[in-house]
Image 1 (cartoon, rainbow, N blue to C red):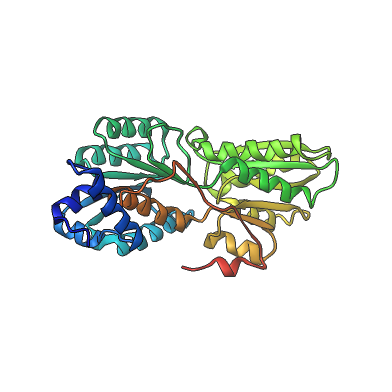
Image 2 (cartoon, helix red, strand yellow; image 1 turned 90 degrees about the vertical axis):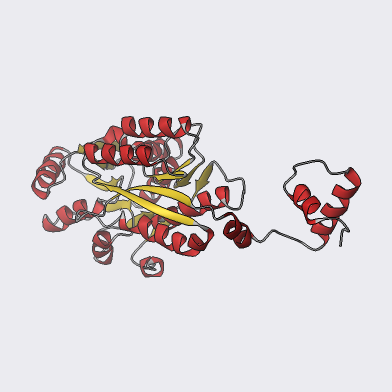
Amino acid sequence: MAGVSVGTIDRVIHNRGEVSDITRNKVIGIIKEFHYVPDILARTLASKKIFRFAILFPKENPDSSFWSKPLIGVNKALKEVGHYGIVGEKYLFDQFNRSSFKKQTEKIIQHEPDAVLIAPFYHEETVRLIENCNNRKIPYVFINSNFHDNHKLSFIGQDSKQSGYLAARLMSYSVENGSNLLIINISKALDNHKHILNRQTGFESFFKEKTKQKIDILVHYIKDMDKNSIDNSLHEIFSRSSGIKGVFVTNSKVYKIARFIEENRLQALTLIGYDLTEENIKYVEKNIIDFLISQRPVEQGYGGVMTLFNHFVLNKRVKKEQHLPIDIITKENYKFYIKH
């Protein structure tokens, strides 16, 4: 249609080599008129290029099913784009073991993949990994926890502070002026989970900025995950602080608090936590957990792979921050969110 060679068309499309302005404008005009796009599959088949994406995620563990969800999303995306030469290499670690995380980061550095999809659990080891990636010009994407780094390709997940802010607004509808509220952070190493602290900050900010209610907020940290340690810790805080009307748990382990409330037949209180896991659903059905805030973990995993695909194969510019919607889950609507 343009009356020029295939080589000239190629130079115009890829903006390389010398082409006269008249020819370039003619070719671009035809491209726009007929909405031409290159055949990406043909291009990748011709190049025979294989893109190796390293997936650095926690293993699923009996304590919580949350981390099985992002892997569902990853596998779904890999199935969709595998014929474009995309290969996912999984490096799974024990989320409660720093050395396990470190070992997998070292394997990634040694194997030098084309890109890395990271769930950043341990700060120092994550810094070391991304420094090596930057030195080797290996792009990386974070999910779940936003690791503040200027060189990252993208972050996919929730605005943690805003989700905590939302939790506080929900809480404000059900508690009276003068109530005591309790924030519970359950984590072995809280410093490595900035998103949890951001949720706490967002929750506290709401009651400082947006309400005239006089609310006292207590913050309680639990580091040991076994049931006896958690029960002893909760007995201590509830006996010491009477009149608690609401509890905000900053991660998916809210079911551990729900179990304690049920077993000890505590007075009715509002309980808010995170994530539609199998462990939490049971207590949503019993009306012990009032609200869950969904992080859309399947979409995080799926979006991570597709972001790298768009960057490498489609040559698309990707957003630095890809915040997912903040969904409110209750007994009345949770079934509509269960897809897997």
